[in-house]
Amino acid sequence: MAVIKRNLPEGAFHHASVNAFLASPERAASGVHTIMSNGHPVDVKFENRGYDDTLVSFHAAMSPAKFTLPVFTGVSISEHLPVNRLFLCDPSLYISANLSLAWFAGSSRQPTLQKDITNIIRGLSSETGRTICFGASGGGFASLYYASRLPRALAVPVNPQTSLAKYNQIIVERYLKLAWQGEALDRIPVTHDLADAYAAGVDTSVRYIQNTGDSSHMSNHFEPFMEALPAGHHVEPVLVDVGDGHVPPPKAQLKALLTESATEFLAHGPTGSVPATR
Image 1 (tube, rainbow, N blue to C red):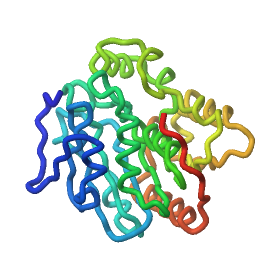
Image 2 (tube, one colour):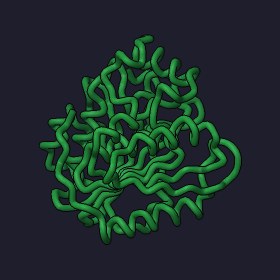
Image 3 (tube, one colour):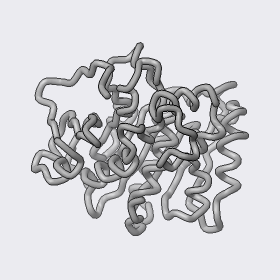
């Protein structure tokens, strides 16, 4: 699978499987961990800073032709938060230099990736702590999905896709061709419509940050997602105007939004039950 060269730091940890990682005494050690999923790598960076609570950061689209993999984002804007930090690199990007976005949803070579990443996050989260899942665009999709699979979790998505079927079809078809050998979206074994998933009812708290100038994401993702929510949901929309198109808030504003969301949640967040792993 790893046709893209990976640049791992000296001393990185290696685990033969997700189960081996979960059983390892080095599981909670700070550093880069390579965890094999169906014989192919999942690279994560964990910072154990001695807290009960954990921030999980998912990157947006990243071209392997422009960035050295693995890539971990969200480092500087979350440095000040009183949490352990887990950064993930989407392993599907190792398939091809032409694949820059895969939503942390998996591939034909890692068909159980959504379940495996859920278990990795659980393995690095305190039994009594809270988890904050953060990401923008494709990483926002991942933050919404994985937070919904965790207890006591908050998702902070920024301009996320909420349905792959409603996203740019050229990009989605490229993902299906390269990651799933051309299989149809409705035939791959992954959750790809989060409006449906949240409509079924989840205890997850969400602070949904959306640029109102991003007309495509407003009409195709934000509005259908909000309209599908059941009564009693825990989703708070945060609408910002930062310009036309699919652009996030400036770094300082994004840091402030994440800080406010995390601080309020850690002080007052709910304590939900553990959802069953799909």
